[in-house]
Image (cartoon, rainbow, N blue to C red; front, side, top):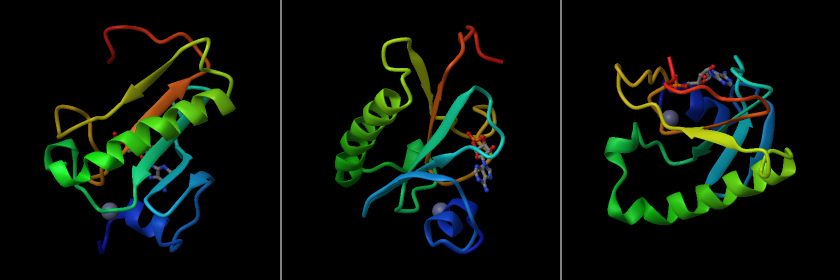
Length: 114
Ligand code: AMP
Ligand code: ZN
C-alpha cells in the first residue's frame, strides 16, 4: 500500500534490520526499542489492524505465533519470558496502520503497561 512504512520495508524501499522473512511474513528490529529485544512481526499482506483480520487470514496468525516462538528461542527469551503486544487504534497506541506484533523481552515487564 502506498505511503505505508511497513509496506515500504516489505518491498525493500526503505532499509530495516530483518531477522526473519518468508513469503507471507517478515520480522525486523524495532527502530525505537523499548526493551533489549524488541522485534516486529508483520504479515506482508497490508491488513490495517487487528480489527480487519478476516477468517481467511487465520492461517497468518498460526504462522506468526510459530515465528514468535522461534524468535523467542533464537533470542534466548523463551525460558525467561517475554511479551507480545498488538496495539490497536488510537487509544491502543497504534501508530503504524499495518498489522504488527511486538515481541519484547530481555528485561522484566511491568503491569499495567503505560
Ligand atoms: P505501534 O505504535 O504499535 O503502531 O508500533 C509501531 C512501531 O514501529 C513503533 O514501535 C516504532 O518504533 C516502529 N517503527 C516505525 N518506523 C520503523 C522503521 N522504519 N523501522 C523499524 N521500526 C519502525
Ligand atoms: Zn502496509
